[in-house]
Image (cartoon, rainbow, N blue to C red; front, side, top):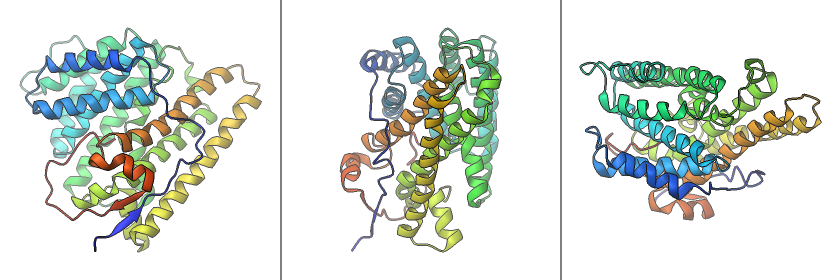
Length: 342
């Protein structure tokens, strides 16, 4: 008899409902047509189409109140994430570093000639197209924050590749510290207030930093619970559930309960922080609340995307969402099972 485990219903009382952007169809068609006209040598056309569809779906759930122009930027960014994520999963650290350098060079100088011999042209082309459009729709402060956050993201993805190369298994705190950057949430969150010039001291305030940190950790814990099955099947231990099982000598059921409790505690604290916004005399309370609502919606969007796409559960996502039951997959040789994972 195959082993089954139950996924905790971690967002059963989360106050942000599933919402989708009304411009999804129009912006999605544009992204699909744009990428269809650019067949990249690194991906088979079927894989490229799948990455496009994932980008469309996630952006539409994560940014339901964006204008048409803003949503196009968000979809383009989700496609960038999908390409870098899917590619870097199968690279060594040296190759990931080359891609990371090319990404940051392109973001800082999107019109500069690229080094065709030493840089991945596909990536530079995707990044340049995304960033030239993004800068038309982002304030100067949002652009500055995005570049800083994206650099932290690429640096951490390179660190993850080094861990993979050296078969390094981190402890819980060290793992969460890495994931706070390699998840990609920080640059994604920088789009929430993309049309506003926000003073740096407001973004660095204790309230906004703490809410952002809690949201990132909640996304990490949720992702790792949802992805555990497919990752354990290919021997990937870069997962909080696997780490806790090994570190605390727990079985899968006990480890999931442990991670769920961590998630619940963070959710409670996030909601308590959210409640302080309305009671605050801060003249920036309206902006802070918009940002906090964006974070809260992202947490819901991530769960919906995990079950509604084929990201972790193939065609069974909606069934798993309803029953919470998952059949443990057998171990397989490491291969090209990667997908849009973060």
